[in-house]
Every structure is written in structure tokens, then in C-alpha cells.
Image 1 (cartoon, rainbow, N blue to C red):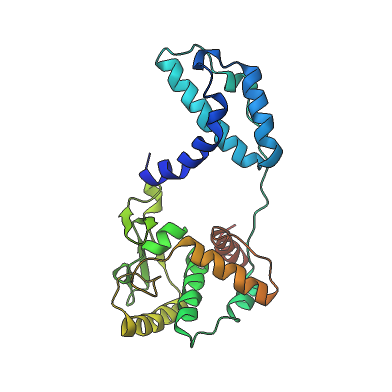
Image 2 (spheres, helix red, strand yellow; image 1 turned 180 degrees about the vertical axis):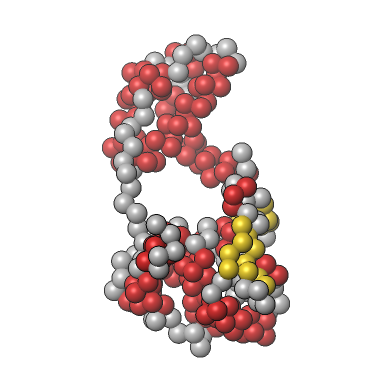
Length: 247
């Protein structure tokens, strides 16, 4: 797996797997897994419990391959039921209302405006968007090239990595309004800092929590329900459906 995936999952393993640390792997029985599952389910979302138990099952499957145990008690018990999540998104009208509260004459707010606009109008994943360089945008043809994602650990440790899937490498034709806004932002940004990152106000790539905070702040000001960053991707899909571009 990718390093970022490993680092994202490790805290969950360190937090929830110690339940079994005083037991030999071959002594773990279905009743133990069920008790653990019930304890997790008391205070955690079913989707998270499913993810944690899924990692545990993978570990036990590996133990079977290595001859440490013979059965997987987690699979005997089964995982918690999958709940169909409610898809969150903003309509075009809600999005316009939110960004109307952003004052573009302020440099930092201008950066937030272009970041939210870029995500809403392209449907990119946050890692893809934060990796976009000015060279990835052809202002003559209006084509945006998406061929990488950004691994971000901290301000001093970030790098480009391969996209999530091969299908993630794609080209998007940007509308003229978006191209004009990007061109305007490029002039403002480059007059203050020299950076290849489109979504940057200080020369380094944008962090997720910066965008999440902006969504929370301006949604509250606009009286619009708050959504998560990934929901901007859903919002883009909703926009395309409303325009009759997809069904």
C-alpha cells in the first residue's frame, strides 16, 4: 500500500488492536471478536467499525497463511451491517451563496475563493487539487491535466505520488469563467510569491484543514449546511446532473 495509507491506518490499529495483545493469536475465538466489536460499536460510527474490523480480518488471514492460526474468528462473526450513507452536497445556488461571503480583495480570502471554486467546478479529490501546478493548466485550450496526487505529511515533508487509480489520470475541459478566475488568481499570487502550486498562498501546498475550516466558516455565514471537503466532489456531480451532462 501507499505510505500515506499506512500512516492513516496505523493510529486506528494502535488504538483498537491492543484489546487482543494479551492473547495468543490462535486463542482468539469468535466470542472475543464479538465482544470487541460490540465495544467499538458503542461509541463509533458503523463505517469506522467496519474499517477497523476489516483490517483485523486481513491480519488474521495473514496469520493463517503463516501457520499461526487455522481459522479467522472475525469472518465467523461477520462485520457490522453496512449503512447506506447520506450523500452530502451543495447545489449550485448554495455554493454561490457561500462564496458570495468571501471577500476577494483580501489576498488570503481570494486564495480560499479560488480553492473552493476549483474543487466545486472540477470534482477533483483534495489530494489531486492540491497537487495541481500552473503548468497543468493549458489556458489556450482550456484543458486541465490531472496526473498526480499530493502526499502531505507536514510543511517540510510533501511530495507528488501516483494517482489513486489509473483511471484517475484524466483531462478536464475548464469553462471560460473558471479559466478567467484562475488567470486572475495567478496574476495576484505570482505578484506576491513564486510557486508552481495553484492552490497556495504561501508557496507550499494547501492543507486539508485549511479548506475544511473555510467551508465551515463561510457556510455558517451564508446560513448553508456544512459539508465535508469530499462532498464538493459530490456537489460537482450534482452540478453536472442539473446541467444534463450526466444521468
